[in-house]
Amino acid sequence: MPIMPDLRLRTIVSAPFDENSYILGRADRTEVLVIDPGFQPDLILDALRDEGLEVAAILNTHGHVDHIAGNAAMKKAYPAAPIIVGAGDADMLIDADLNMSAPFGLPIVSPPADRLAREGETIEFAGLNFEVFEIPGHSPGHVVFLLRGTPDIVIGGDVLFRGSVGRTDLPRGSPASKPSSGPCRPTPWFTPATAP
Ligand SMILES: [Zn+2]
Image 1: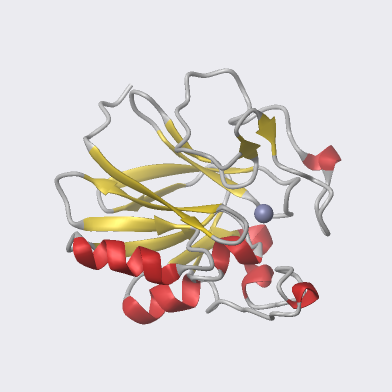
Image 2 (image 1 turned 90 degrees about the vertical axis):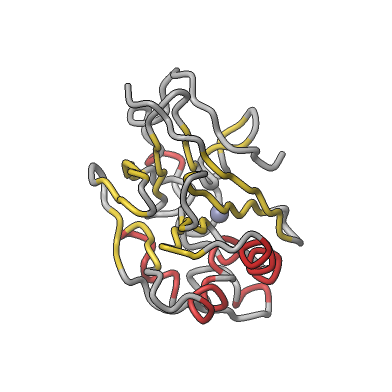
């Protein structure tokens, strides 16, 4: 088991859905990853500037609007940072109907993905290696990012809620496709603070 480096991890909760955005990086570096920037990217940008951090990549666990609404602002501020999303949700970034923003009357799209994440690959940024697991069900291309160490850290998006699994009844969701293998197994994972 690799030794987990000291990390900086900041959770930023965005209104109105209590969506969790994360700033995650090694404590000994100023490069970080921004994960699931939501409806309040200014809060993330303020935190980054306050701490003098640079964004190496923008990760999206899935394509629902509350997890991608801040992509455009992040990309504008850090144009070199690639936007990475699961291959099966890439179309949701650029389609306001698919990402469920248009049905709420506020169409929002993201810049297109720069890179697609697929099952079994490892994504390395800012000195951290994330294993990718495809966990469809909440959305067709939902991915989970696993950072192995002691303890393991799972960036679970909406697959895992505190004490529950994410809902699978949304458009394009599918309870049948939620797998029982992969990360859904009893390991001593630590998941960064999840919304209730
Ligand atoms: Zn979602």
